[in-house]
Amino acid sequence: MKSLLIIMTLVAFLSPDQEEARYTRARSQMVKSQIVARGISDPATLKAMNSVPRHLFVPPALVNSAYNDQPLPIGYNQTISQPFIVAYMTELSKPAKGKKALEIGTGSGYQAAVLAEIVDTVYTVEIVPELAREAASRLKVLGYGNVVARYGDGYRGWPEHSPFDIILVTAAADHIPGPLKEQLAEGGRLVMPVGNPATVQELMVLTKRKGKITEQRLEPVRFVPLRRLK
Image 1 (cartoon, rainbow, N blue to C red):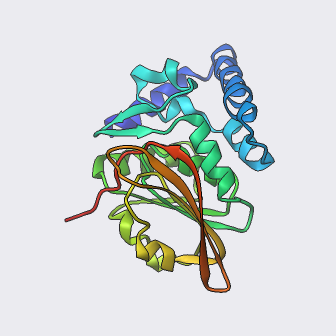
Image 2 (cartoon, one colour):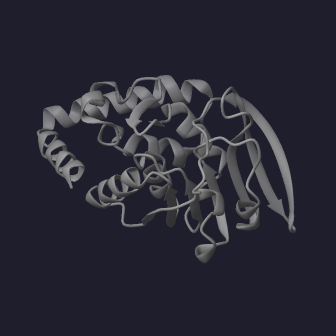
């Protein structure tokens, strides 16, 4: 509840035109210098990155750093990913209207919000209960009614709502969980960092065609470890 009050206070504080314009300019500059300049070209992804108020998904003390080219801590040893990585993973997933997405690792809810600007429905799972509650409240306050968030073990996916056209995993493991492969729809794409969680991983894209999964290895990345419930 305290976090929700903080968000509502921020929303109220940012309502004056001058303050809102400052964040709009910062967001536009972020997209141009950090995202378009590095090769992201999908129009839907760029529009979403330009629309989602990233400053409302970071701790209040870090609001002025929200549009910087870096990940930021959000508490509980978790981070909100660098803007470019969010855009890159979104573009790789090939989002579009009519699609259903699963995100593993809700964090503050930013990646879920970006996806929600494009696809029909986003299901997102967070293993840290405090973050799960805060993200659910934040997304509701900000009007993302097409996001369904819950606390749980993302390794298991969300079988009740499968199959998914898109699965994004925002935490690293040394393998791709079998349940997530099983919950990928025909023609669907799964994007996940794979490798030693303590060092550098590779961003991988899995695509399911005619029941068979193909793998593509891409950029080196660094993500927090994918945690399991005991």
